[in-house]
Length: 471
Ligand code: ADP
Ligand code: ASP
Ligand code: MG
Image 1 (cartoon, rainbow, N blue to C red):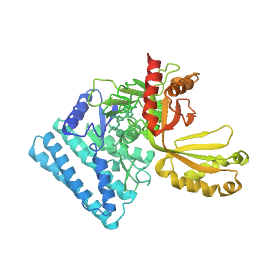
Image 2: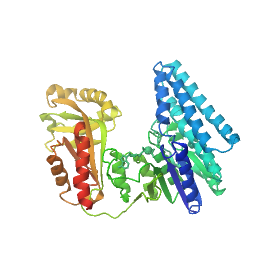
Image 3: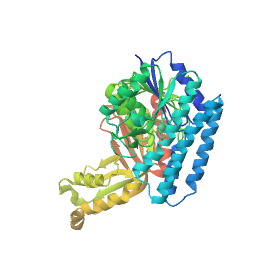
Image 4: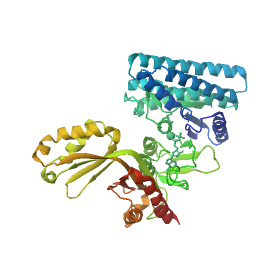
């Protein structure tokens, strides 16, 4: 039986028109696929609104969440009115939506009374947008004569208790998929599953991290042993750069799992970085397609695409970072300094995006999100107190407002001169490279540059290196 999991992102199901289009894409796929599982995000902006309601309520503001409830009610009601033809089905759906929005208001009220929002409460609140939208999309599919049913992923995707960034427990998830999803598919029902959401084994709602609906689709694809996973979004596929920085970015027809892994990790928002792992393990092809331009084939992600030696396929940037440096002439002789540095960093839960060590061993630098810098520096100063007192280490310091710009492409493997071309093109524009690291897979080279030069660096690499390669 041919099975496809199709995920629709926030813009792809963000208005009545978009939902109509998404539903028509599902209908078009019916003749080719016996089993279709749909995964949906909340409407664009809804998750942000839910989170804002919770945060403002926790800070003593009892007004904002109430006006957000009113806005969400109007927005969803308008969409339902535009989509559903019969007033009986409209009012049934509106009642369901109303109940979710009442839950949102009640949660915010409790958060307001308590004066804090725990990660667990945040998951209960931020998952409501997907729960609402799964009902709307299922109703629209039924309008088209497709037997569809909304399914809460909290019944399918079993996760650990790491609220707001939960990891799936695949064996348990597979069991649930077997017992709950497969029977629906056998009955030719199209399940419309909430993206982004999971639950612990005992049923407490969790979420998989922002942008996590891609991850949900990949998890379900793996659990179902699907033939393909498609993510429908609002651009033609994975592009050579972020189109908001480089308006003439072009579509990349094929990428390997490891290339997309690097791209997503280094900031290409088009796919959640964790969405790769479940599909890689089973070798399931992943497609990124444009809901609003379905005639374009999109990007196909597989294990071994064709590569042209020397080619860089894409350039990305991650903002909001700081570079922390531990430096001192006496570091050379101190054993285990790197291990101690990184265990101090790990103790603060900071996510290290890039590491670079000078060969003289006189400094170790690493890049982390700016929000985590001050606890990390304190932890490092405590860990290295003795070395600092002895002046083996001179100082631990951070440079804020930096961006990692990465050039990605398996074609650079074993091809000399790629890095040289990158640096000379940046030097020609007087862009200062603060630090460099090459991915061990040789699929990427990452550079740290000042935030105010980042967009220029991306455009320069895009026009001089990527265009140059493909001409
Ligand atoms: P969805 O809601 O469908 O998941 P997202 O907003 O999460 O959509 O991701 C799609 C967006 O990612 C695009 O609209 C685009 O602005 C941005 N983006 C950043 N880098 C890239 C890239 N290299 N290729 C394609 N899109 C990118
Ligand atoms: N709605 C969630 C978010 O905004 C998940 C997603 O869109 O993928 O983060
Ligand atoms: Mg997304």
